[in-house]
Length: 491
Image (cartoon, rainbow, N blue to C red):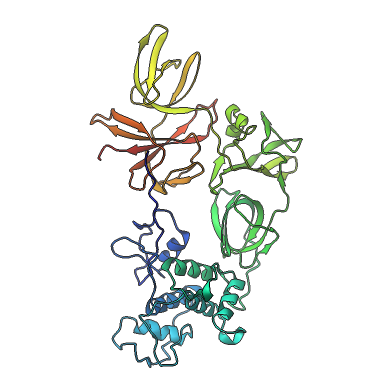
């Protein structure tokens, strides 16, 4: 059995190079915060391709991050340095002199009573939060109480997402800094008016909530992260899996977010026949442009074509425990305009495998599949092809099989080790790992025939992983199923 390697997410503070690639050898799962600060040129990775997020940040390093964040947030040019270097521990030829002077001129950072700046000291979480609150336009005079509680309270009120512990005097990790910088970029400046002009009005499903940002998969089949800075939130507990009605402005700020007109089926299943779907005891039809979504417990979303939803095998899934969350829907008159099938981990009773051998038997062509160990009577019209990948179902009469089109795409991110994992290929295709997703470790001969094949339970981080998509025959479900192959040829 293969062991899944657990890798720590990491982050490195940026010291320059905007436009750096967002792929880091020690970040195995995509991090929106990391991608965002690197793309903005506020932070970056090391030349060796690592991110090293758990490293600590010095005050001098964070002075640069603070100045770059201020520029990104305000869109203003830096003023001329108005403060001479009067800190006894800041060397005149130090790499950080300009950054520190800019941070002090902008009144984002200060020295101490002894006339030192302590540039090489590790900055604390409380100090990071304080600087970022000042970037938003708040000063000591705006706050009541003693430091750091006054700034921590203000940061919480503004929507920054952090855990309070020991007044946050612990050294700030770089991943912590990246996350709080992203929060700062999403929070309006003090006294800034929120643009109330509606640029988007849509329904969608919440796929993630982090601090004051929410990610929504909208009916336009686009997933986007919005700031909740100006939103009127009517949802009591905002969480992944909720269908919401929302409006947003051109700046990507939510103006409203609620569950108005969102209905929930009383049961966890639905009766579907032809073009009709029964929800809460009433018959509806699907609108021609209806959006049908599957969402799993990890917040991954797949889009289902309407004709595929009505296919027999998938309909059967909707009447079983393969749907473990209530179905949510939105009506447009007497038609369903949006249907969310929650926490779907369905199986279509399909098997996936390479044909190991094929030959003539007493009752016709007999085939065996790698790792299966049984002989099947072939019922297909086309001749079976050895070492080719098939999806198949079997009964007492024999096996029906459909050759899988080989779409070799390497998985872009993540370690696949459990049901409900959501994965992306390098081409951006998304699939949900179900309990029937097959993972095989295959070794090929030089002529591309199979030398050995072993079924495994998980994928390790150093595996060469490829996914092949199975698109069933038109009279089947029509859904794409993932068949994961670990290429062991070069080991």
